Length: 251
View 1 (cartoon, rainbow, N blue to C red):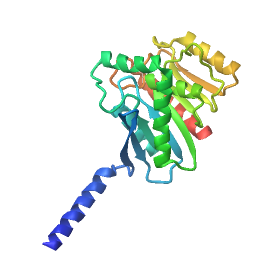
View 2 (cartoon, rainbow, N blue to C red; view 1 turned 45 degrees about the vertical axis):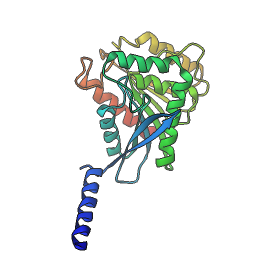
View 3 (cartoon, rainbow, N blue to C red; view 1 turned 135 degrees about the vertical axis):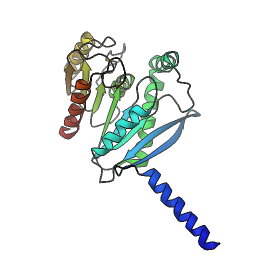
View 4 (spheres, rainbow, N blue to C red; view 1 turned 180 degrees about the horizontal axis):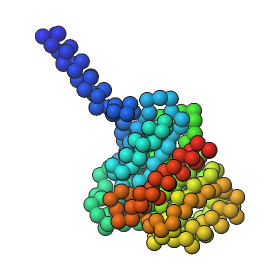
């Protein structure tokens, strides 16, 4: 009986290891935490080899989904600890555009709460998986706007990357506290934040002395990296990912 129990224990342990490690040799985990009584989570993917640094990913307006988790997986395969962070909360209802607008609108309307959630998610990641290396913050669409919010807030990073993000600077804000280079990856046909918004942002960054780089993808619309969406552009998706990797290697 004791032998049987020990065998079962070993099988359970093997099963746990099999489930925890995927076929690329990386390890995925979730950390839950609370802000003002509301529960949030970070999804972490850790590479098997010694990590080059840590990359935090902020989700689109539909919340933390498999999209960001797949991006985290891809970045872990490049050698980075990848942490997809949640700004809406685990139990938040996210079933359609009305819900997405409610959650994003609430944060756009309360910038203090917006920044608080970003910083807390990053702090949780650093406490659990902080390493001697560089830290980057990237995001898609709403997440891209959140990345710029973090840059304006002076959150300590080694680089900020916005994929087709909202580029407008809120009234009364500026980039005087921004401490690292910003990479903007944007479509020329984006109807949400057009070329005028991009030009205005670049002028602001230039005036305020913030290192920056922009790559524009001709004809690409808003969600050009989101496979299956009406805006998906495979060429722009591939080129923007390569631009991200160059940025990481150079900074």
